[in-house]
Length: 94
View: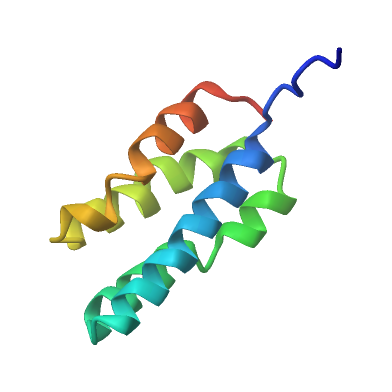
C-alpha cells in the first residue's frame, strides 16, 4: 500500500490556479466580465509563485494578492473554494 504523497506549496498553488480558471470559465458563461477580470488578475502571478522558493513572494501572495482579491470580489461563490486552499497554503513552507 502506497503512502499518500505529502502536499507541498506547489500543489496548493496549482489547485488555486485550477480553481481560478474554472471561475473565469463560469463568469464568462454568465457574461460577468468584471469577475473574469478579477479572477484572471488574482491568478496571473501564480506561475511565478510556483517557480519561486523565495519566502517573500509567498508572503506577498498571502498578504497582498489574496487580500486584494477578497476585497474586490463581491460574489461569495467565487471565494468559497479558495478558503480551504488558502488555509492549507498558510501552513506550508517552501
